[in-house]
Picture (cartoon, rainbow, N blue to C red):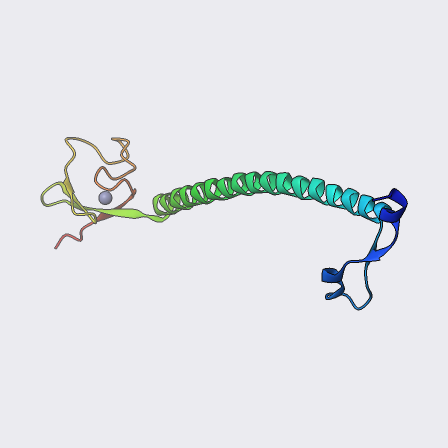
Length: 139
Ligand SMILES: [Zn+2]
């Protein structure tokens, strides 16, 4: 087939079905279409790489979020413990008749000598809370 003849505009019947106007292809049109397809393939490949990169970034960000959530849980637990330590009080009631303390956490303590303050006892040995010293009313 002569080049000039190939270049001659001719309709393609299959494509005609899908278009209201018949599409006419010549060598230049085909060349342009081939170039367009090459560009599209390059763009698709580029998009695939971007997608892989985005996927990795999403994975990384997800792991950061999980780390942050774990840290937040730990912070909340420490906050609770701190609040408990700050607010929690253990009552040590001194019974002068028997010379011992009974604590609100259910323990008994007696000192060999001196007061709690003199013995530098500020926190309960049983529960770790700050001691609030009370005296039993002697009848
Ligand atoms: Zn206690």
